[in-house]
Image (spheres, one colour):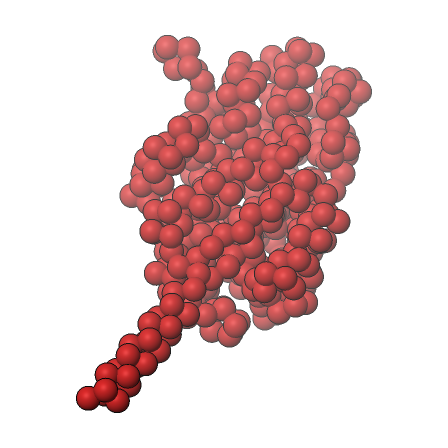
Amino acid sequence: MRVTTIVGALTAALIGATAAVAQEPLKIGLITTLSGPGGYLGQDIRDAFNLAVKMQGGKLGGVPVSVLVEDDGLKPGQGKQIADKMLKNDKIKLFTGIVFSNVSGAVVPDILDADGIYVSPNAAPSTFSGKGCQKNYYVVSWQNDALHETAGQNANELGFKSAFLIAPNYQAGKDALAGFKRMFKGKILGEIYTKLDQTDFSAELAQVRAAKPEMVFQFQPGGLGIAFLRQYQQAGLNTEIPMVVAEPSLDAITLKAVGEAALGLNVTSHWNSDFDNAANKEFMAAWTKEYNRPPTYYASQSYDAALAIGAALKGTGGKVDDTEAFRKAMLKADFKSVRGNFKFGPNQHPVQDWYALKVEKAADGTLSLNTKRKIISAYGDSFAQDCKL
């Protein structure tokens, strides 16, 4: 009787220990920019990812997860140090969160070289999308060039025949101008690369005025965009030369900050807060309740990234060591995106629809970014054909 009791107790303890091990949360490393002019972009990425986890009861795809968040400070070296620590000390296999392409270019290769998995909620430089594509690298946002290609298409449909281009001098800025030029059929009257930390654009605006283009295309994300739009208005250019941009140049926070300076701005995006689908309505309601501030595109992308990771984890039973099994599950894209149609292309970047948006004023004087029409359906990117996985 006593032996039976002891054996029973040991068995129960063993089962309990096994269950405890099974419930050990999977660590996810979220490296993002939380400080500086672009800090609010990383904050939205962090908050949206955590919101998805909270909405699923601390899990993703039924798997308990623990999200470790670190600020890269928009410094590639700092990002590398954080990734190294997470890989070696925290034994993290699955990463996400990076906002800026210069940080991505420094950090992602180290993660992949260590047989880690990276799922991008934003930065998607051309260097990882064509011949340089990788099996353990996934993008849920867009490919850097693609979103600016859609701005070029929007400019064509709006009838503009000449343009002046401005972007920061780093990988995403180069991809932005290359993407716009790839699609725009008009004449380019000028092209300027600015500093990534620049706040005074008076010299560039003087060149715009002298060139007299029909429109301006600019890529200035985060706080850079706020400064640029304010100075564009102060120079009186907003009433003379219209602007056509892609989503990073005007998000909900930018609009709130600059107000009338953004009125009439033409924007292209794969998502907007007014999208009428069940997944987006659920996201918007949960976000508003949790944070009581308007979400940016970055928030929508990070929320989708969490759902995509959850779908992959569900397919693997929470395992990430078998990267081929994770890849097979991830590429099914078995989740409901807030943007509507979504699937992965051959380079593991999105194939999705793109829309023309415009900043308009309501009868009560409030400004909003409203979806006007679809401009491209099921669009991937210009590099997918060069990816051989």
